[in-house]
Image (cartoon, rainbow, N blue to C red):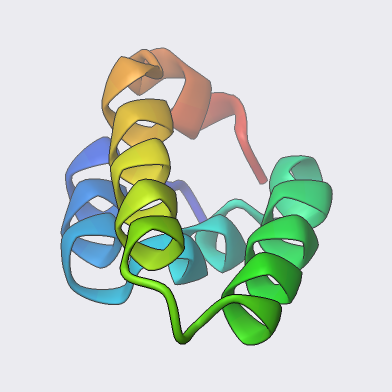
Length: 71
C-alpha cells in the first residue's frame, strides 16, 4: 500500500507521534522514544507539545517521494 504525505500530516496534527506507526518500517525508534517520553513526562506541558511540534516538523519536511518509497 502506497503512503501519502497528506495522510501523514493529518495523523501528525491529530494524533501526534502515532503518525510514526504509518511509516513503521523506518520510524520504529522515533515512535518508541516519543511514547516513552510521553508516558514518563506526560504531566509536563513542554514535553507533549514539543513532541507534537517535532512530529509535525519531521512529517512536513519529508518529500512526497519519500512516502511513495516507504512500504
